[in-house]
Length: 259
Image (cartoon, rainbow, N blue to C red; front, top):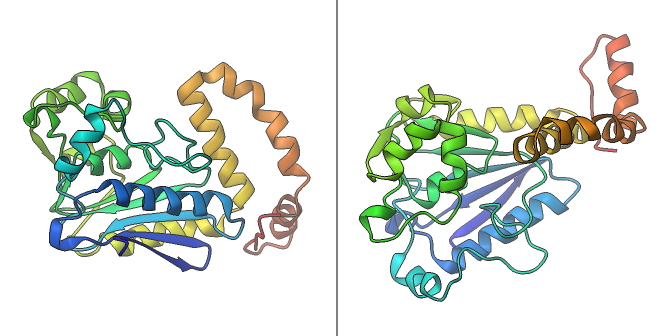
């Protein structure tokens, strides 16, 4: 039985973590299933955006440490099969299409780390975030040490990474880690609304926004600037670029096909 379930809603691939009786504790098998879902999102031309969420009261209370400890002890980590997308974006390829994420209740350890590798985040107002690894005798190895200082600020990140203390949805919003805080129970609806807006936009334009901003973040502005008009040339030859101009002239909403 897989605890990672995927559902297609138009051009959106919804990815549900469905192990609520265990607070969505992440097993190695679940991570492989997440990788398969992310790979499907990136490779299927009909899919334009992913929506990640968890079933139950909590997004997750952490990893299944007893199953991961032997893997970590062997010098391995969150690895995926060759050619698959790594949901943490650490060792394998990163997703090429935006992922929107909805969280509630506890969003601990791997929940924070996968959130840091998404594009838009919606939190219920009862969400509590925490990186608990230093309280369990280890340290984060799914991307928090790389990305939390970038996205939250150096000292803010160290405040939570070094203590294992929790922070609230409101604090996450103040620091820019989440973009919306909504009443508990409304987080998935708001995330779907945002995902649908992205899905209606020009797919090639959206994917190149993600590519360019990610390149600027990881390799610097000069590297991103150098590829801007090379990438734009391919987009300008698309049917969607023609549709964009035509819809502008006809004063109507554009209908994009991704071609």
